[in-house]
Image (cartoon, rainbow, N blue to C red; front, top):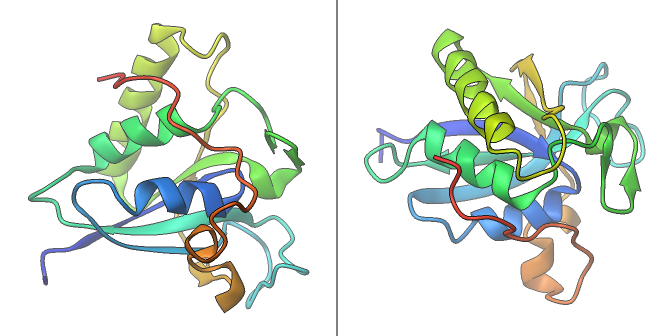
Length: 163
C-alpha cells in the first residue's frame, strides 16, 4: 500500500465525480474537497477561489495518471468555463492540479488528444494549476451519492476512451 499515489482534479460538483471514480479500477480511495483558492480552512459557505474537487488515491500498478485523466474528460464537459450543468461559478471550473512537471506534461498531452477528438464540440477550457493544498470538505459532502443515491449530479460517462 505504500506505492499509492494521489491525483487532484476538479470538474464541477464534486459529488458526481467522486461517485463515478470510486468504482474505477485502481482507485483505492476518494475524498471531496476544495482546491486552488485563497483562504485556509475553506468551507462550503466560504471557499473564495477554490474549486470543488476530488483527491483520488490510486495504485499505479493498476491504473495511471493518464488513464485517470482520460476518464475525467469523459465524465464532465471540459469546454465550459466555470460551469458544469446547472452549477455556475469558479467553484465549478474544470481543473487539473498538477504536482510536478511530469503530471503537467501528461495533462497537456491528454488535453491535446481530447481537443483533437472534437467530441465535445468545443475547445478544452480545463485549467492546469499547480497543486498547493487539498482541504477536505465537510463530512456531509463525503460519499454523498452513496448515502443519497438519487441526489443531484451532472456527471455521467459520455464517451469511450480518448486514448
